Figure 1: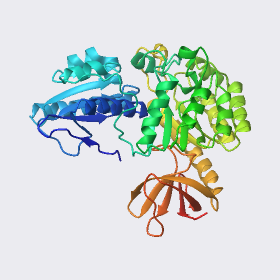
Figure 2: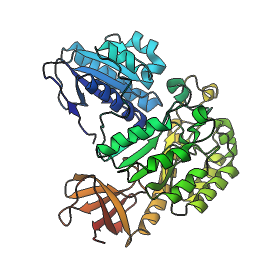
Figure 3: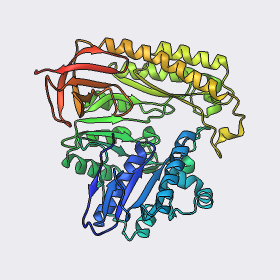
Figure 4: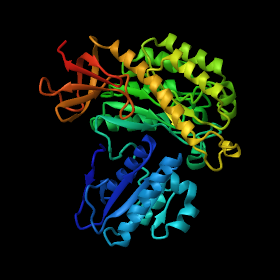
Length: 444
């Protein structure tokens, strides 16, 4: 459930109602947009439960894969119809879908007031009578609970992955300077943020454009020194050219979580080559072993693609065996989406949709068993847990090995013991299921 944000300088002013679709990068971008609107003393709310006739709807879209594109189009159509009915005043579209398909959208959905791309925030603000405040660094309006924040360290991507449309929508990799990121982290910490979830299209490329070297390790040390930041989590690391020195920092600093999200996509050499991943099966296996050797307590998350063009039964069996042997702590799996203007669009999308889905379900079935076994090993142990929210009779939290929304949760009976959302507690695990842990708060 996303947090509803409402910042109003004057009830008489039109209200800017921001709708966010897609990934954590979009969440971050919407928060920056809302921070700019607040600095302009404008009424702004995130995903209002009720609409007003003077609402200006800003839809931050996703254009990554078919399902996400369809959700974005359906949302645009929904609010366009509400505008036709006089229930809202304007509809503005921004984000990846608008960046990628602006001419087509303008031709097909004509009653949208304006379409803007991913880097058009100053133009969007100007269109509604606001100025872009260049002096704002980190001053955004969080839509997550205030104790954690998605922390974008770079924009765009230079990788040539054949299936991915991100460079078409986000452009080339651009790192944010370390000093700006530290200022942003200090601002967030001052306002109650305890966990930074580092995101980018490719974290491990960080710094090459600014400092002529992979500089994620230096950034981690600087962020680790910020008072009030108790957890720093790494998401979206690329395997080719992986900077092993970040693992040294992970071992050095207690507030850097033993957690790494590294999408590997496949293991078959034929698939990795066609995907243009810049890595082989053996190098992938060696990298996973090297990471686990260096940080034995690390939780590794990966994502995989099933049904990429030319994926044979042999390729899929190879993936199954590898997943069974490697025993990732966390894993997501998706069907291949045939995306225009990507390199793989030249190939025949020859794996039937049902077979793609069957393969995904098979992989997730294997992972469910692995997750159950790994969770059973946690029973009887005590973990530091960050409480995210209360739902019904349960407090819901996470260990350092779990990211919000996508990973395991720890459930605590609030009738027995209570802690405020945003607080850290010690929890002894009493029982475990496939993807959930149950426990009680203990005093140490």
